[in-house]
Image (cartoon, rainbow over all chains, first blue to last red):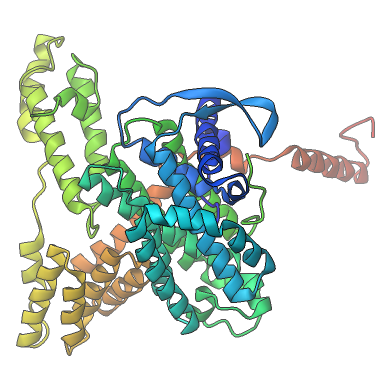
Length: 294
Length: 228
């Protein structure tokens, strides 16, 4: 998970921001309560978004508390009271973070990834036991992802598919009872996943050229080792289309979901936050290295 | 149980005809079948559209307009029957449009591929397309639709683009290509996303511009900001 899903903060009402942060903190606290303090570090924005989205599918009232928190000792924070959706988001956060670190360790022998893996091992075991079927499916999709990378797949669409399907798995939350809503969530997840994968590939272009690692964009558009900026400028429009179309599909799915609450935050993310992020990354102004804590 | 028509349209109970009509138009725009063409959620959008139409017709006949003046009546009664949005599937006419080219068995395969696509059976459609011998404009078009449905937008675009290039006169292909472009355009220009403050100059730029202007003026012998 990469933390690309963010609200467009300047457009957000202060109250809405407070609620969004409430969900974010709640996912974090849910992790600490059930998995211990260290796995909290794996927290990502994308899963906070998932918690907000899933909670919006139910009509149950949301409650919040103002509590003092270990991570922010000075001021008390508003935190949404945990429910099954928030717990689900935190479980998925652990699972995805673990796989992400494992991937880093096996690919680049990244020491941080290896250590993180060891630290998260127990939490991961616990979380995957809760959702055995899901974990199994995610694992086989990851195998596919790695296979495509090994084979140096020359299509961005094909390379993005396994990750998009992982996100489909994650978004299809078993706690959402309505089957139609689950289907809508799944399609939303697929497109968000696709968007994340492609955006991340674009963000990593320079690093991947330097290290010579696989990058679907470089293989599809046959980068020949020349000027990277010229290469990027030449294909930007195509990727812009691909990314924006994925987002427009997210938006369509979201329209069909008929969110019952949190619409201010969700509208902000779906209609504005994602496209702002796309433009920022496409222009190369920032990306993954931005500070992510709220 | 039937849903509350006011809730379906998202208006207050006892809303006027105009409010109902406005809300209805917005919703039609949002759930329009054109927007969901080639989308795996198209059936859900259709369902939603039906719900909206029913609610609108019900309100136009019964509840709404309680606060209306008499002279508005004629206008509204016609609109309740006339302007309500009806969606008809264009599939049957599309078959006939494309039947001029290709071999006879390819035509049959093409028909099957479309049928698979309509059912949402992507693997079936792909298998049939792989079996087809002629790679004409129509083949690329269908392949593009399969990719679109599968979520492979980059390939979908290039295939449909190719179909249009091979047969620029075909309305269906051009329509599909335009639709792809419209989706991204529509999303980028959605009313929520104001782009104004992002493009406005920041303090640094303003100061820089002033300083430049001042220097230029001084070169010419004048002065814009007298203190420096």
